[in-house]
Length: 371
Image (cartoon, rainbow, N blue to C red; front, side):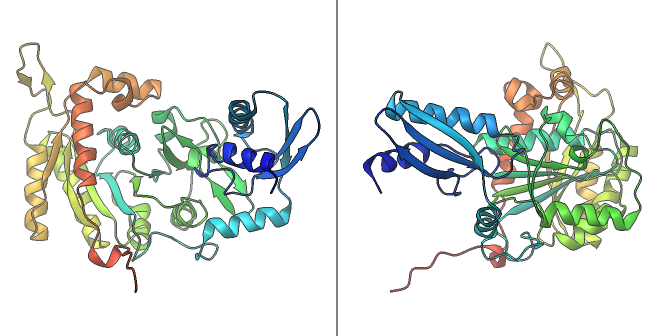
């Protein structure tokens, strides 16, 4: 390797592919480096011709080369050959065969299902904010919008990018450091979904097996309300997942939320805890006004504790927040736009509690030195 090419590789090793989250030098994306008297030509190979991150990659490459060489370079944007693309996919899969679910027993990824018995309790807003907060503090996070009929995660995050297809592999778009997949990314406009059970199962399965997630610390799933087909499919496909039950203070909502948590027990999920949303309105004098009643979260936690024989905690009580509503409508999670808001502080606390959870011993990967 010539001295110039070595300098090119060193400079471009700092350029991270926005979809794969790895240096482009590790992904086979740096092609020929040609030297002449007045210019250095560098070939950059995209995975596909329609790569949505092409301009971003070219800009980052230009910046890195400018820092190293000042001027006198030219970037040639190209596309990988079929053989190069196959080599890349094989490298990404590692030991996994195509169409393999990487989140079965033995996974080192902690999987959490955010569910509720009924819609309108803020489940998607909570899931999106917790995912972004986990990424913000340095974890590798994936987020599946499992609410096939009522998908809203892309809007919650302000995400308009589409996934990239590498033949049978799907690269999820990344926003705020979170890898995200939703059925809404594959539909034109606000097209409704009218599917029966088998198609719902297939969609969830493809989100797990066809999407390249990489090595995640956390996978969060925004579950649909209720106890239907998706809940059953997720229970079958994600045996190590833990449920977080979302409710509101009304006792009528608590009864329905308890039903959702109990359904998770039937499909094998442990219950991590209960979140009570819209718990109170914080007054100017610091007092708390219970607009929607009180006790729902505690009721659900106590009832699920009795059913499981284990302590199911009430994790947080999130106050009513106009800022939380505005941030969701604007597609910018509150933990980013206003981390000091009282609702933000509770969402951050919830994310911190999730990081304290430990994997079962059988799911941990041990690094043992021999000799």
